[in-house]
Length: 96
Image 1: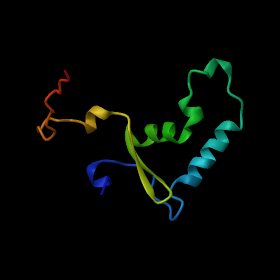
Image 2: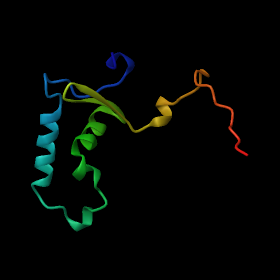
Image 3: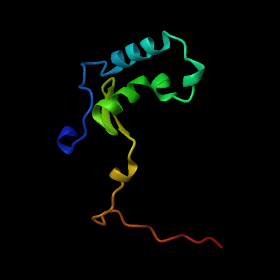
């Protein structure tokens, strides 16, 4: 259903989802020391699966943690778009 809406991501693997792939990616990244000159690049080190899948599937994608689907949104303005006026603004609440 998400693919029909343009949301891509790694395919579901029975029972474990993408957990094995995530563990393998983390293991391979932490197997070598982090150089001090690359300390500012933490995402590829801390969450290598997110970093790799952003490059592969785009800024918004779906992956599986066991049987549960997780939607990664890095462009909230695309999701919270209100061009059709579907999301009404609440009137401000004033407290006295």
